[in-house]
Length: 345
Image (cartoon, rainbow, N blue to C red; front, side, top):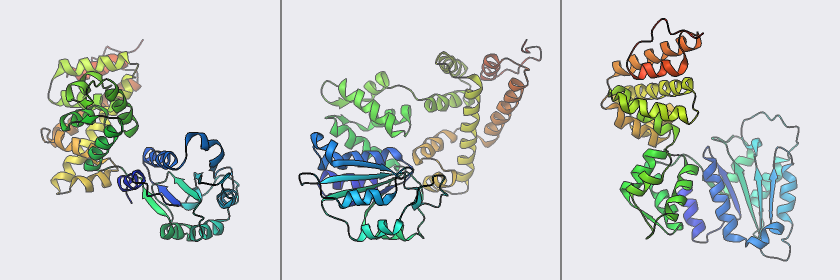
């Protein structure tokens, strides 16, 4: 199941006795875990009926033994195992011995009074392992993959609703453009926006006024201003980043990364690749590819390569001491070459 499907089931009260939650989006996994806990345990029950086990420190059979133990004073208990590296192809650094046969057996004979959650923050599992096969067969499996563009907007609607607010489409677009696809940051900003909304409606104007810009957003805008020769706006963003204690060499490095992404996206789009395929090939979030796709329509490949070359030259001159870093990046943004006599002393 996807995150959205799992979340809807939980909200309806459809709780399974065994969950396998895995994937690269750890925020989604934690959100599902917290949703299950909130649904089945009252706050005053959690000290006695909520147990977590770290598989880097504790054998899995210890957690299974706890799961088979009848809950104190009846009802339901929740047992969570974290970092189950033995479900992947990773070679363990820890010297903990795990009896995976017991885990495979538990999947078949799970008690209904225990909610057993496997919290696996890994992109892939080793499908050859018996324990993984048994969990696939008997558990509710949630893959915490990056949300698609459509899912991201649905998630924003749902999250706003839980906060007693409504966010319109324009506000969603503005929020995503400012924060990117970082779910933790989006949650934080939605919480803030809902508090400051008098009638529960979140508008684009409120987002613009209250939302903190992410570094990624500033770099994205900076790159756009450079190529479009909006020098004054580029310098303004750069100086703001310097005031925020961002290192000039880091800013230049992030600009190079963004220009490379834009170039790669443009090349793949010209070859007929869709956004989803590009995201998979470049290992980027689909939303980042969508934004890049819009941006590169106005940029030629030659311009992008020229900017990458110019920043590579700037990086060399800064690191070799030929120019002071703050000045060097500013001169680049101004479209000027770095004078030979601007050496560090």
